[in-house]
Image 1 (tube, rainbow, N blue to C red):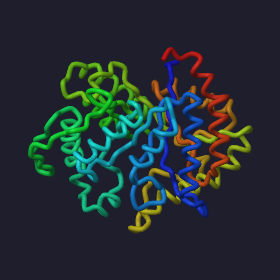
Image 2 (cartoon, rainbow, N blue to C red; image 1 turned 90 degrees about the horizontal axis):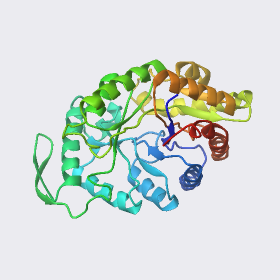
Image 3 (cartoon, rainbow, N blue to C red; image 1 turned 180 degrees about the horizontal axis):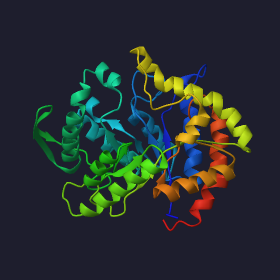
Image 4 (cartoon, rainbow, N blue to C red; image 1 turned 135 degrees about the vertical axis):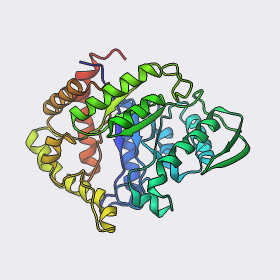
Amino acid sequence: MNDITFGIFDHIERRKDEPLSETYAGRLKMLALADEAGFYAYHLAEHHATPLSMAPSPGIFLAAVAQRTQRLHFGPLVYLLPLYHPLRLAEEICMLDHLSNGRLEIGVGRGISPFELAYFHVPFMESHEIFEEALEVLIAALRGERVNHKGPHYHVRGYPMELHPKQLPNPPFWYGTSSPDRAVFAARRGMNMVALGPAMAVKIAVERFRETWEMQLDDPERLNSHIRNPWFGAGRHIYVAETDAKALEESRPAWRIFYENIQKLWRDFFTSTIHFTNDVEVARKAGAAIVGSPATVRAEIEQLVAQSGINYFAPAIAWGGLSHDQAMRSLRLFADEVMPHFLKRSSR
């Protein structure tokens, strides 16, 4: 079996009848525990105009994470680049990297929701072109002393960069995808990757990623030129309880709330996204969720690693209708009874 390293993925969904200040405070307590437990990184999604995300400005929350953890790396997965001016974002990245003493990990993407982009007047059909140009300017700002750029979407005339990141030439870049073609894009640009989907789909993405990575090792356009051994991982929603029956009982209503949260913005525009189910048992069979006792969760992760070839696993721990106490219990069980099974064989 491949060595496996663990991270955490998160949306910070709205909890019904819980003040937002309590949600933030609870999540910071959870991340302090994750820091002690030896998770490598915390990856925070960015979404707008939806109950799926109460952290539409991930950098603000991550600044708090930097002050409450010591070893845990963290970053967005992903910054929606079409919604930022890349110079402002570069300055924010430099600040976060120094506030954390070099623990920032930068996830980037264009965004998968046309409605979120539309609210900010970003045409979805042009969003990938905007994303690639924004990434070009962002890299120039992180690595250079003065930025000059003239393109169809951004025009920068001699901007002096007074801030630079602690990690040189830049913090590691990440890319999230459910497409093998986009896995190739991530590897070609030298980014770490987290893939979604069934194990066999992840396997295809991982194989194409690794093949492309080896071919591009000496390409000057690689963003993580200082990294020789990349992360290529997968994500799942996870819930661990003392028994399989208890885990299923508690995760069923929680999953339905996650489903409602992810559909809310789409329904506002009289449509829905077909990639999700409201039934956690269907989600388990489809490879979107892992729910059960520590022994069951260990076995399913082992199977995922063996089938897909990943070396990184970033489960969502706090999601949907799970309470803070449920998420914390699940995290403790995962850290105490699942992770050690894999870490003892890891050489990292």
